[in-house]
Image 1 (tube, rainbow, N blue to C red):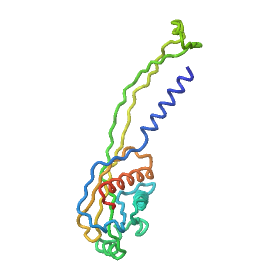
Image 2 (cartoon, helix red, strand yellow; image 1 turned 135 degrees about the vertical axis):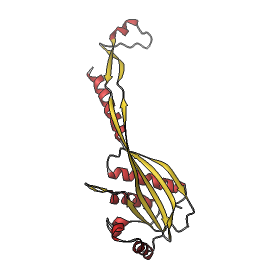
Image 3 (spheres, rainbow, N blue to C red; image 1 turned 90 degrees about the vertical axis):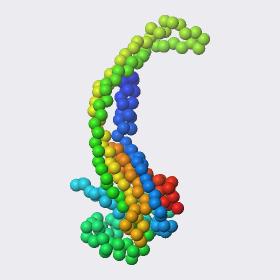
Image 4 (cartoon, rainbow, N blue to C red; image 1 turned 90 degrees about the horizontal axis):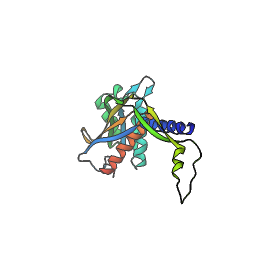
Length: 219
């Protein structure tokens, strides 16, 4: 009995850990006419926001910059260059001038779009197990019927419970530095129940860069 319950407990813990893992999916993406030199030198701006315990900006920019560099793109974090309040301290003209002076060819904005929470009730379940009560003898040539009496059946019931799923909708928008009026690439993602900022940022970056490769935004 002890072995059986230990096995069941371990399975429940494993399932719980799998459910708790963050999952990022690409919801949609679009690519327009992209000038050849757009990805020569990209400046990454995060507009995802911040919490009381710290900022999301630095974590998301670092993750995206790292994955862009791994893909062979010359990328930089706006947080590292301009600080956390670059868009607040500079007006549009000043920022555009700085981007051109530093010869950035593309600007990638990371934007928080929406947050959604859903509650779901998981009903109770009952599982029946065959539990050995004594030694079981095995004979490859003969299976005496009385060996069946060494088993009896037991049931384990898992109570019902509520789960809450939080989904964050994020977007990446790529602009050509010489014509910042219209985005030339847009991708939207959904991340469920992120365990922390670092893992959410990593998954977001991996999802976006993978799609940019598929759509040949990154040559």
